[in-house]
Image (cartoon, rainbow, N blue to C red):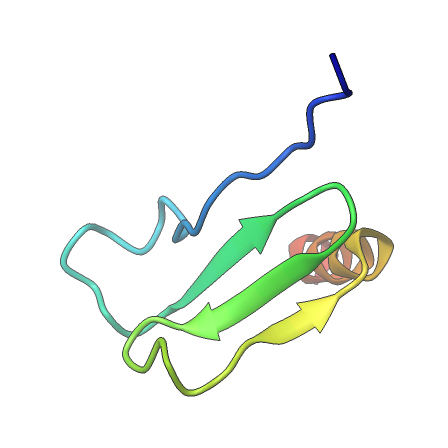
Length: 63
């Protein structure tokens, strides 16, 4: 049996609230992080490396 790959599926921050549609959604895997607009899910996806995403989140938390 092969190794299982992490995939969180699309999710919003818990700070967004269930009815809030003015945010972004994130999907984490072992090899890529994808970000999309909640209001316009079909308009495209930004893809970055997990290390890049981690650095961004860390920087945001520190500022």
